[in-house]
Image 1: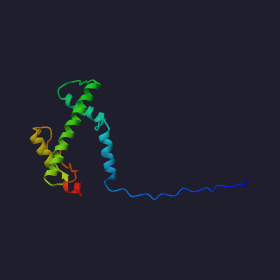
Image 2 (image 1 turned 90 degrees about the horizontal axis):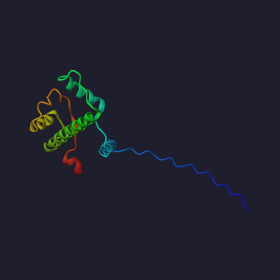
Image 3 (image 1 turned 180 degrees about the horizontal axis):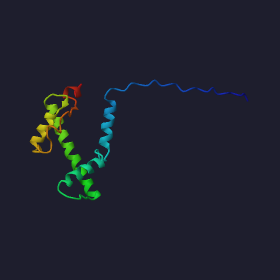
Image 4 (image 1 turned 120 degrees about the vertical axis):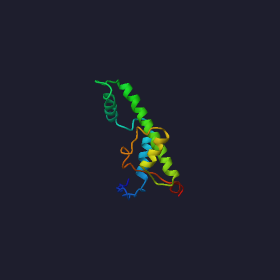
Length: 135
């Protein structure tokens, strides 16, 4: 029998490919769409609820279940407003969603007391126009 030695083959070094500019953002969007968890931190919602309740009560207390339900409602409310504002921006042919879009949605839904222009100052959300999505 002849001794045959197998030559060790080094693995080929793969060249790193440069990702497209929107690849990471699309990954994050898919990750959030798959998830069923909350988008807003529980502690932030809890502080907001307590500060609102402190205006009318001396010692505000709530169960964890009640805070979870309110958090779900807050997130649903904000997602609906942002979705409508994004649609308004796209219909007007803009790439960005501005405070004016948010204000018009709030006026249409009669939530103008909730969203004041001072609260919306500096809010800008980038969206794709229909011409960009088809290209």
